[in-house]
Length: 303
Image (cartoon, rainbow, N blue to C red; front, side):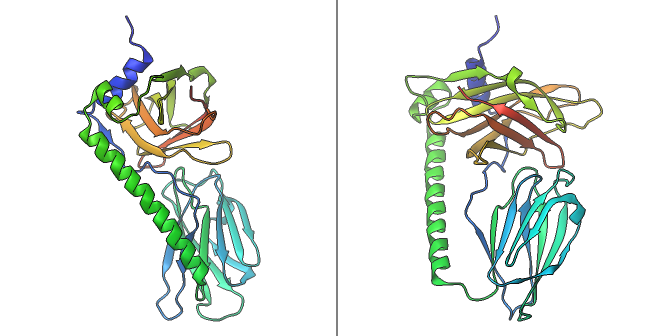
């Protein structure tokens, strides 16, 4: 007799002796990153994360020379839009994770520093949406905003630390789910969504089955992936779950028992914080390895 999807999920989540956790699982936030250029110091090159199809905006506190810009591989960007003091970039699907492109802009007034250099690093799924570049002294308001953001991030880290400590101290199995209050009287809801999934033509692996789950405070996607002929074994390093508006669920962990051998299939579990009530999706799930190969599955809905 075949096991139910819920029994399979519980077995996967708590059979951790042979499992390995993936470190890169947190989604990027929407707060702006701040870069300061000091005219008295040796010019530095700041690295900025970009990703295919995602927008990255640079906002400067000084006007730019609009007809002068150096951008390596410019033909591989679907959008390069320079304004008076802004620059918006969207890489095309031709960029490869791990690639780096040098970007240099020049300021209009000619004061020091006369230019700014950046290194754009291609990430499989994440991009820095807002980058503020300060060439002159920042206002007290920007420092106050940064302090508020740091405090909010610290609070999130403290909550995450408390959750991890509670999970570590709690028993395993079903008892652990009840002890950490991740399971209530509604239990675990499950839905098989394999037929509704939209797979990208560029996927490095084939999705054999996709099942989604929801508990009191979390959702999970269990994807059974198979390697294609002629490819190397594959291991998931990170994942994102992005909604139609571009907002991402906070991914808590990516679990894979072992490498996916050539010609075989293995299950991968992606767990995230549960979205708000009445927001079952759909979401787009993207998985990536420590390399160029990715898997994108659209129309992922939760129970």
